[in-house]
Image 1 (cartoon, rainbow, N blue to C red):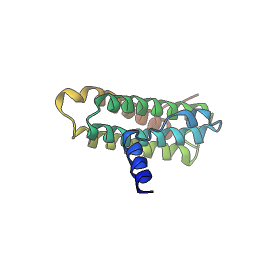
Image 2 (image 1 turned 135 degrees about the vertical axis):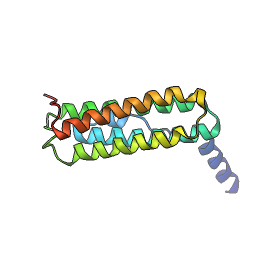
Image 3 (image 1 turned 90 degrees about the vertical axis):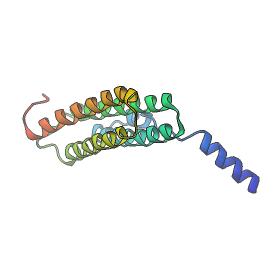
Length: 146
């Protein structure tokens, strides 16, 4: 029993659980797809942090890339919903809040990195910030998605 438990713990430690965009892409409801994509982006930032702590830079880059793809999917899903962001309801505001929180998480993660590692992270941060600003402008009625 003890041996099985130790092997199970080692297997979990060696193969960290990585979320993916599969469930979000498979979702037919656009608002729910956006929420799932942003949840995945948050999980990918957790994964990037764990990979960095483990010294796996390629894992960090993969997690950052998927974070960016998740934000794209979330924004595109909201656009495809056909709803007016200004009157669209809580899913637009919730997405805006989550994107803003994601930018803050990226800023916090940035403090851990050294100078030569900041380039890829800054690209993802700028990408998420642009998506947030686009969504916020649509909610405030500054731009139209139609």
